[in-house]
Length: 294
Image 1 (cartoon, rainbow, N blue to C red):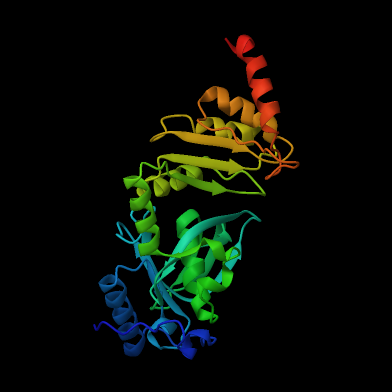
Image 2 (tube, rainbow, N blue to C red; image 1 turned 30 degrees about the vertical axis):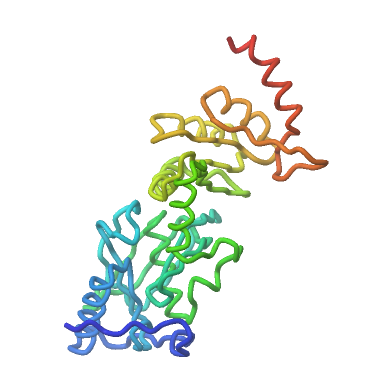
């Protein structure tokens, strides 16, 4: 086994399409996998693709129990995946922060399929077929992108949500020293994510020293409203919960009575997000609801 140099963004080999593995259980393939595993472990990576060490084969490895680069992420079983085929199982997209060993020092928010089936083979040619979601699904998609010559930067929708890790930490520390309240927020303008995913986002926000964690999502069904209600069961600190879209106003009123520490409204001529009420209407409604709810 050997620790191999990892190619950095700018190396043209990272933009190339990798070749399928045609022969399994060979000394060369086993040696490649061993080197990838040693390199990933040395760099505290959550995954690694063969093209990242200059080998144009469709081979990825991933997996982690506890990782200092992703301290609050769920565990992912160690996997060697060759010639992978990915199939999204729903249209649900989730945003999440990602980093990359080939783009050191940066983190960005990337949309990924939330529910996924992946198929392929291990180094012995044995079939792999799994259905996964959450962080596991995100890691698989990130690593398999490398096989098609893509870095996660090419999937970022809002460049304003790309930053150097050290700068994020500096801003958080500076805000803390100035007694500025830090709000860590997660938004979904299409659906209401599952409660497990939202709680995972709360853990991440708390790890970045957020004083308040804000959840904004788009309820489409009564069950989506209930998802927000569940967030008030043993939160790790103050939370602000609010819906967007047609069901946004009623959800915001409900969550304010359950303990949401913030209710967002707009002050100008139009809403800043779908489903917002004007601040004056929010105040009046909450004032009128007070005697009823008591």
